[in-house]
Amino acid sequence: MNFRIRKSMLAVAVSGLLAAPLAQATNGYFMPGYSTKNKGLAGAGAALSQDAMAAAVNPAGMAFVERRVDLGLSIFSPSPRSYTVTGNPSGFPGTFGLAPGEVESENDYFLLPHGAYNHVLNDTTTLGIAVYGNGGMNTEYKPTASNPNGTFGAGTAGINLEQMFFNFNGSYKLNPKHALGASIIIVGQRFRAMGLENFAPFSTDPNNLSGNINSLSWGYGAKIGYQGEVAEGVRVGISYQSKMNMDEFSEYAGLFAEAGDFDIPSTYTLGVSFDVGQSGVIVADYQRINYSDVASISNPISNLTGTGNPPSGGCAQGVVANCLGGSNGAGFGWEDIGIFKIGYQWNAANMDWRVGYSHSDQPIPESEVLFNILAPAVNQDHISFGLTKDVGKTQEFNFSLIHALNNDVTGPNVLEAPGQQTVKLEMSQWDIQAGWAWKF
Image (cartoon, rainbow, N blue to C red):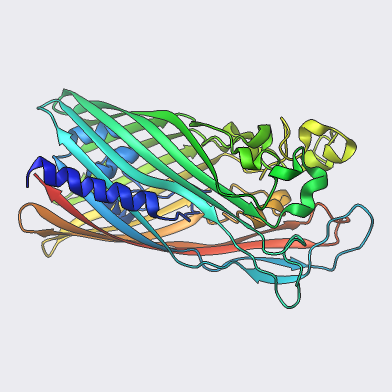
């Protein structure tokens, strides 16, 4: 296969990625893993790189990956994805009651492709590109017979967030067992919200709050990493991804804090892998996602009400900075999370087999459930399975399955009278991914 053919395959993959809707919502809104092999290990792999997509976890690992192209396609199903309101609205002046009952989001299936190429320049240096969706969020709650006005009283309510990463990476071997790597990352993201018009009194810019066209935003950041064998059969990996500085969503300057700012938070990952027997390996990662980097994600809803702890003036008390879209505007109230991932890989019957498990902190506090009806990313536990089958000497088939166990978070409707209503968020997920690779 010549270079022109390889370049054409990668171009097709990139075109497919740009056309695909994203709807991941796993560790907050970050994916648990990226490549098919990585997902089979529940996302662990900072210390064990096995394909060209590994740069999404740790670019240093590309030094130990052969020249290859990886293409893959995921079918993602976040279902059920719902909220349940218990208790009737009080009807008191100044409250914002919700209709009682359970409402499930539309759109249960999504396709998400990825593509990557690793080019080995010489014995010490590689260059490559990986294109993938970092994650995202999609909800669409339509009016029901018991609630004809919709979730927030303005018809169909929901959001759609899509993110696409273009990871241009390179690695350098310090010696045969240790390497450094770095990536320049360009990110495109798109967002749309609907059904939020009744929050206009809490917004600095009601015309750019809800129901506008898809808003586009571009930004950039970087990723650095180290991977090396520190003892016989024992490898470690460390990677850090910077905060991605993004353009504002100008069409939603009255929704997100800082006039539409929606940067992507920084992350870091620590990993280790141990060889077990002749063909087995155990991998384990700890990842930290710093949602507090981004005001529109981490600011609490109490910035609207002024009822935080300690109490402070909120939008309702005339503090404009705390209104939606303000310099300290209310957001989703997500907290930083840590994720522990562990996986086991072994070879049997001429195939590599994988299983994995991951557990994360809960990003959504009970006090923040109201706005997170739009983004019910409550899952904490994932179990995974995967396999690789060589096809001849230069190709391979990869498969993975991840199940995010059903989880829920229940808390008060903080815009109602105390004790009047509770909101339960619930979601489980399935992710089935298949990939094909060419090795040169």
